[in-house]
Amino acid sequence: MQYEAGARTISVVDFAKVVLKGEVLADATTDGLLREIRDLLVPISEYYRPGYEAAKAEAREKLKKAVAEMVSSPRRKAAWTLADGSRTQRQISQQSKLDEGSTSKLFKALREIGAVIDTPNPTKQLELD
Image 1 (cartoon, rainbow, N blue to C red):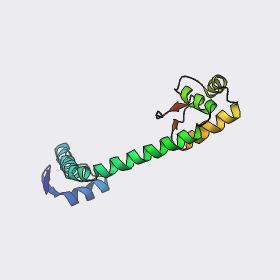
Image 2: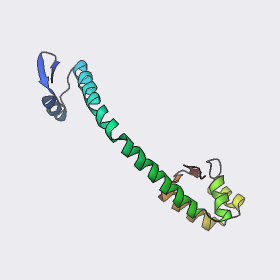
Image 3: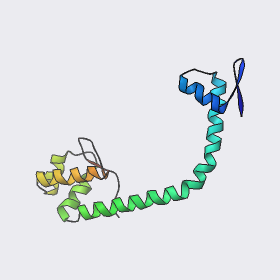
Image 4: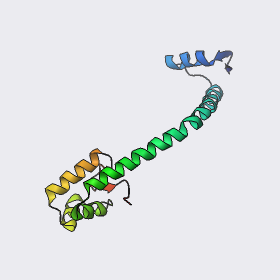
């Protein structure tokens, strides 16, 4: 495919070479090329989407299972329920009757697996069934 860039015509391969060198082409050329790239990627995306979605759902289920195992005791379950972002880790510890050391270890482990956002106030990323 050829594109016109000002006074010259340029191929997609040449465009990539030009971009890598840092040269700037006309906006219309860049727009056209980006649209073509997008149009070429759509069928690829549609082909791989079911597999991607299935893998994503499987990973989410694994995460739920790991969290469920971590919060199996009533006190840990209470701490998990209170992790809505409105309370500090200390407040969660006090309200769930879980000692501060155990609360700290719990939320550290939950952050490491991606179940809790790494912020000052623990915020869970998923709900357990």
